Image 1: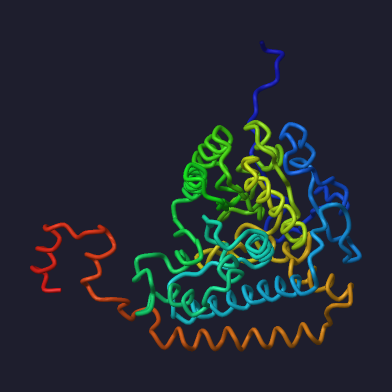
Image 2 (image 1 turned 180 degrees about the horizontal axis):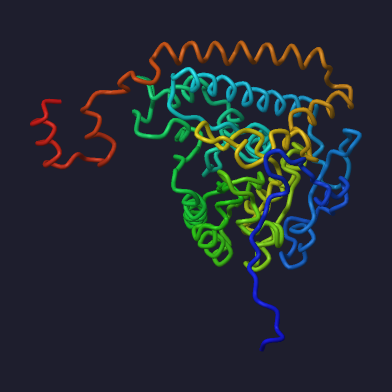
Amino acid sequence: MSERPPLKLHVPQPKARPGECPDFSDIVIPPAGTLSKPPIDEPDHTMRDHALGMIRVLDENDEAIGEWDPKLSPEELIRGLRYMLTTRIYDERMLKAQRQGKTSFYMKCTGEEAVAVAQAMAMEPGDMLFPSYRQQGLLVARDWSLVDMMCQVYNNTKDRLKGRQLPIMYSVKEVGFFSISGNLGTQFPQAVGWAMASAMKGDTRIAASWVGDGTTAEADFHYALTFATVYQAPVILNVVNNQWAISSFQGFAGGEQTTFAARAIGYGLPGLRVDGNDFLAVYSATKWAADRARSNGGPTLIELYTYRAAPHSTSDDPSAYRPDDEYQRWPLGDPIERLKKHLIRIGAWSEEQHAALSAELDEYVRSAQKEAESYGTLGVKPTSAASMFEDVFKDVPPHLIRQRQEAGV
């Protein structure tokens, strides 16, 4: 016994701490176009390479190559670029509003815009979305009103949630955007349950949900995968691996040992690992998973490999745990810049058009903000006290009616 080495625990460490130079040289980025695109009825056990490799379409020359190229028209690509730019400008304005004291809290999705936008475009309008708190691009890509989104951020008199939610926890029933929950991971089993119900009713709509890399350590993640695979629910389960939870890097959720997409293997699901900053790859992988679910092929787990450029939230200071320039060194680049360069490469866009679009969208978002703020910002009572008795029961029970009368509201 004395000759045996003492036992040790492995404590995951990020690649660099504040003040150090980020080094991503050990990240394996396979060339674009190297992974095959299987048929949508491909057995999950033959797709191991898709969970361990990476689906990429845009190469280093900004060209779309390989079987996963979705062959989108220039008009569709420009539409995606427009949605991503709108989302980024919206984020910037809402962050400034928070710094000005007009709202209490905000979370940006800078660097992750391709995830929500491309996935929304790849799905059908009636499909149900169970987002986490960095998928505001889903609403933008479903052409929802920015004014309505901002009113929910400001918790003002036009806030459809009547001030009951944290500012960034949107809920829009009209476009199938399920209420965001602050309890991380709850949306995964909810999405599976909704998809199971859709199948039980003989509907044609599927569901999709999103969690971050850190949330994969929550039990809800595993409950969802179990139910999804057992009942072959028509659902897309997305893990947005943006490298950082609120202050701990993805190694603490198991990302050092294997990919998050590889967790699908043990559950009997197909797993796809995708370049999350490649708009075309995200679109194509999502369309494949949606077609599989819609044809009763069951669920798919997708890992979207990206990077959280912004702080976790306005309550976070990332300079305390990572180098300031780490995002600039991220090897997969910026999703907006990459799609812009691809459009220029194919002759469908120019720097001048891009500048004009940016100016147009900046004015569009500014105008929406002006209208939203006309209904009030932080500190304006969003609704009357009587609203506390509303939206809880379909039919208000007698004891609440009496309490409301006694309160004089």
